[in-house]
Length: 220
Image 1 (tube, helix red, strand yellow):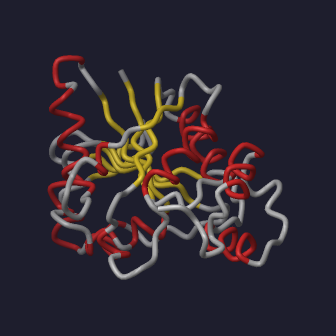
Image 2 (cartoon, helix red, strand yellow):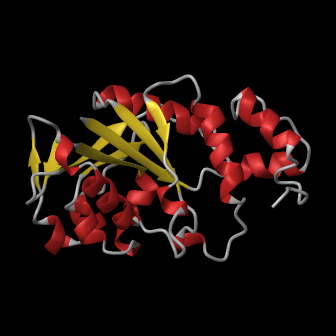
């Protein structure tokens, strides 16, 4: 099995997320992509985040009808801050008997900040990393992103166009269609009662309106 883990705040999930996930599914011939919303993102501890329940419902609505997309609430089950390394270890342990090949999907900006993540070195050795890049992306090289010492443990494998690490897992950089959509902009537009059609799916848009999300009157 080849699965992709696509984490994020998803506040809200938008067309850009869905399009990128669809392309990564195709690029790596994945069987499934699991959307894993963060419950308490360590980089946003002081930010106002929509309750998990609403973000979960919006994801479920957005991916409904696509059998290759699924949802996990694993990070909401923890009573403490969510960390990606713990999520990856959980998935690998739960499915360890099923010959699972795991791909951690993230954007280039998030990957550039990987050294700020908890146990980032261990995380990079646990599974494959699939970094989504914009068209024309200027790869800074692993030495700049990971530091020379740790980057030296990875060697470029021309046959798969990825950097292979000591555990056999790879770091890939793959260009995807760049849709310049930001969840923060959607939240702002919703707060100002502006149209958010074609930024999110119709189902998500209706949910946002119905529940008065991002207008300061959302139910708990």
